[in-house]
Image: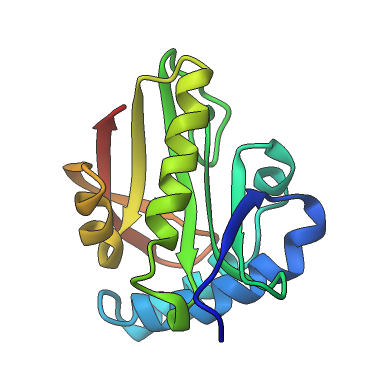
Amino acid sequence: MSAAFSVRRATPQDEAGVSELLLASYPGSMRTAYDQATLEAALPLITRANPALLSSGTYYIAVDDDDLAVGCGGWSRELPGGCEVTPELAHIRHFATHPEWLRRGIGRELYRRCEEDARSFGVRRFECQASLNAEGFYVALGFRAVRRIELRIGPGPMLPCILMERAI
């Protein structure tokens, strides 16, 4: 396996690859922070690529030399799960790195791309509804925890998360 990767804008044609990546990443990484019942309810919903994000022009995919998805993530002006927009604010969305590609700078490069593009649209602050297991990643990027929140992910139990923010 090569250590090389590149980042490009995701498209609707990346749906299968992003879903495979999310399915490879989230169950293992989230197991450290959530109980089995919560994971059983949430994982079938959060391990599917979001078609709206794939079509947004603000969602990115990191691919290896064979064009296989090894990382993904993006941002939106709209609050996740809604259509509320706040001036100068954007939301970090649906980041993941394939377990075999961790600690190679993929997440940081995806974030850098998000920040660069968001600034060009007048964004001055990011918020992130981070899963409990992802808090350390976002802290390393300069985010700070604001408060604990609970997200409704489909009909199952609430998913404890952390609202995080960062000036850009």
